Picture 1 (cartoon, rainbow, N blue to C red):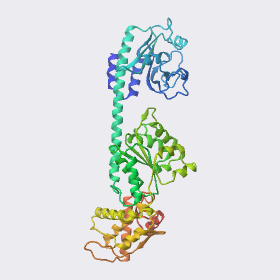
Picture 2: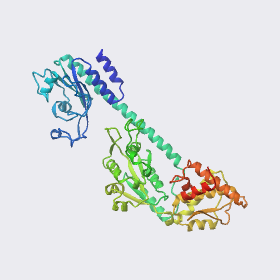
Picture 3: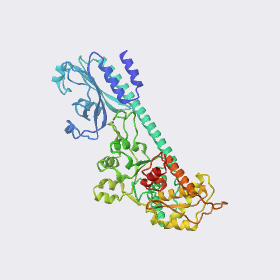
Picture 4: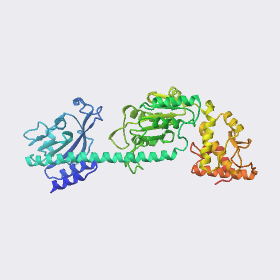
Length: 526
């Protein structure tokens, strides 16, 4: 009944670690069994420190001890359940366990006092009263997955071998099934992560559906994208903040063979260094305080897709090696997990810093820079492509008015001249904010175009724009103040009360954060 119960429970397992513990602990409950151990064939991981390194002819894979159950009969302090002892690793073909894995054949020592050929330490067996050994390969479709071995206090009989063979066969099948379930679970989690990222991306894609402009610089960027997008080459996009580096990354992904997979964005500047590994590589439940559930990580979510590393120059120098390793080897481990995961993700990085100068200054790893800078694309600032200002301004105005259910509106010739003459230190993002604010002002019957000055907003009045079927109107000073208060409140609501940062209300309004904070206090806005 013990065997039947064990076989039934083995078939119900969905996780490999629980399966191994179940087999080891249940076999150890048999009176004649002194020690049970299970090894699996995995990639070599401790080759430099392994005590059997000289015997290993293949450093690619070896046998890993994954389960152990037993107790010493003469040493109460000995822990036979640990997985990091002397025999935690065996080379393929080495010793009896390695021979079983390499040959796919069982090894049986019926009675150790008469034949100790396969026993590494006969004196240990004598002290512990161990008299027999049997090891069976875990075979699934003619592939050896690992080794199941028992040490017994009695002579190994044919009945014992038959039972062990049955358990080994069922264990191999249960292991294959458990791995399949784990893979299904992993793919399900990845799919959920991809769906989450896609939903977030759909919510964020409001600014650009395509490139807008007519400058030679923009045409050059589009040609570069068309050239490199169909390949899997890493791309480094450099340019000032607000120039549209993320749009370039989107277009690279959309024009690539990976467009059916997710584009996963990572703002490297916003990740605390303590959570760097968890954010990029994921973690398992219980890996650290607060890790209440398994997490896929950015690389896992971007597998077979594209990973966009925004502001990659902000990654601390001490953490850059972790990113370099996965770029070089295409593999990583989640925090708290030894299982090595393969990843196939295209890397697109962006930075508003000159990374070549950062390398020269010792703030960015040269080897990581060369890994990222396979194909460089430089996005020039808006002041160097003034031909794009008017098409962009018209696009932002039309979109803002549509979103607000406002009638069409056109810029006057003087307003257009002012837009073109301005240097746009905040680039396209600043232009977008100013045009949106212009559209908001139009609701009160005024058509003022406000550009950012040295001390905040410098309201510039121009000849009125030409709204369809609408005459000119004048606002009182109190009305202007109330309109400004409503505008600031709307910006704060949209940014959830945040003032500072690229996603703060100050950036949305085109103001310095200190200027906005002063106005909030002065206007008693809560």
